Length: 426
Ligand SMILES: [Zn+2]
Image (cartoon, rainbow, N blue to C red; front, side, top):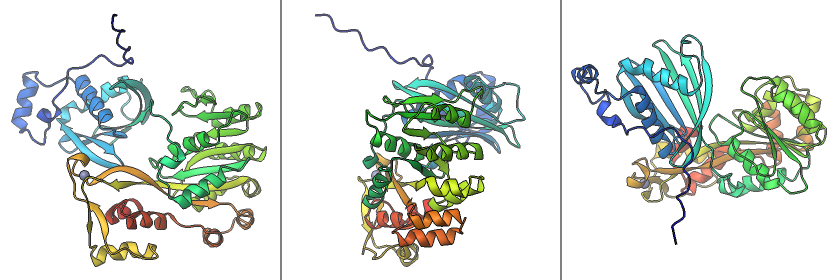
């Protein structure tokens, strides 16, 4: 019997010749050697170099790529689990060509070098689909580019896989039982908010519910939901889309992100009319998000009557299981962590660094968080636009526990290190 034809590969850019980036790294080559390479035309093209960077960054699971012209080099760094690592430093004369390749890919204006530009494109690597979100800004010497990598074929994680502590997980599950109101997932950028909000939507999906999303752009496909993507020409925005969605009587609305007052106002209106509205927002802590919404100009009355809860989260690196060791933490380290712990363990853990973790001592990340469930008393304080201190006191009376306590418990349990706690939370 003849073998079936091989599966059709995903459409991607034509395979470029692999470029040995290490051999054109200006930090390991002399100026003469680079000049010679330039003269002899033996330097790979900017097109091929960019392609190689994309191949490597997608393979290593990087979340972002930074192209930075700094003194004497075009430095390329990859962001991995929240930490930047240098990939290669290219000869500075290549900056313009590299930027030009990036602009072409992102559909941007080649000749614009004085204004920030944003674009996006998709491509397949290693059989997986990726979205590249490109941002270019003019800097003192040339332009700086950053690309956010989005793994499109990634499946949506389940809530229980995100690494929230049992206490946080129970609190989130409780919040998701609310039939209506505004529920926010907040945190700094790159803190896993989107992953959580999609996992939450998945957790409450039933065949009886009408779920509509509005996103910029659509990050994950939800098989059971109608998803609205904001058009790249900006012919309608979040608020326009939301007003239209409300006319279709949904039960659950997922708004990609609340970025401005208008979206915030329409989101709370939508929650007021009996929908469960889930969204993400930048913030520095859970209660701060409530204050931020008030500052955006949302009526305290609306917020007080619709807000059901705020999840604030960050991601923290986990110790590599292959090189984990216990150690006696010195006094200065202990002083940083014990204030957040009820009882400190005798030994703490860290990763020695091994082949399996690229000598970093860490592998994978887990969520840490703090969760506010809006009580009757807290509603009253929102209505009065009370200070953050008052809100925090009230939340604490209902069992609110700050993110530091949550993270410190993960340190004590040997999941992460004291230094990672300090790196993420300060
Ligand atoms: Zn290791």
